[in-house]
Image (cartoon, rainbow, N blue to C red):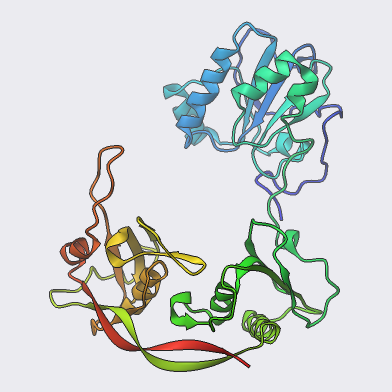
Length: 400
């Protein structure tokens, strides 16, 4: 997987000689002397290859502030950009950048330092690499620490540049087979990682495992009371060859059900629900072109969680804002109920694709959002949602 600077062929590490800085043009010189190889020796160098400058004015402000903070100290700041003149030069006229600013259109400097993503490189006065700053930009405390004590300051840095995430990074170390491996979670930090020949679900409860492999919201599932819904597990399968997603999901589903001795049935149960209707009007129609303005967005947030089993859920009033673009009413209901304490039933009788967006009013700092989603949903989209009871298809698990 190539990074922002293309295919990386060398990965220098801390303690190694810093590669030369490549560039085609000097855009800003903090002094009168020209750049030469000798510039990387004799003082601390903060080298910062960053490909796109004109769209990051806040980053430039912080870079300039960093330079001013260390004025008069034995440190130089070198920013290397790959941006073309057409966008970069007009930006620099309005917002000058301090320190050295070099233009490297081919990304040679980034590749030479093994950068797959932007990172700062700190280089000592002896031209040896001290380390790589793992943040998005150089930090004042790290530069200060290195200036104060090279050894202790270098401990705050990474020994080599970070790699971009790869699908195989989380591939479990099991011999390929069709066996599903299940064990108590080894860490509190979970994750969902997949490739064409493996799937690894880490730190999942039984309910969340089953909801994932069935592709339904957990609120539409029931487990027997004897199942520990708080315990977390790691589940993984590493296959001999690539398989379709549905095949892998089916394999994991059978493995989980066998491990916990569960059998599933689909039943229509009378349940507490939220019923969605459209008595007033339709929500805004989505554009015919899904790439036109307003299509493809998705967001939601809630306040006032209720703990239910292993999950935090909310009642309908607790939605602060929600949005889903170019979607059907059924898809909107599915998204909405993910965070709710009961299923959402679509009785709007609306067909087609719409843009659903319900925003909360702008509030002063420290003020809690209003508990009035139901009212805002009707005012902004013409949709009404009320508690009720309906027969809902539910995946019911029982012990074998």
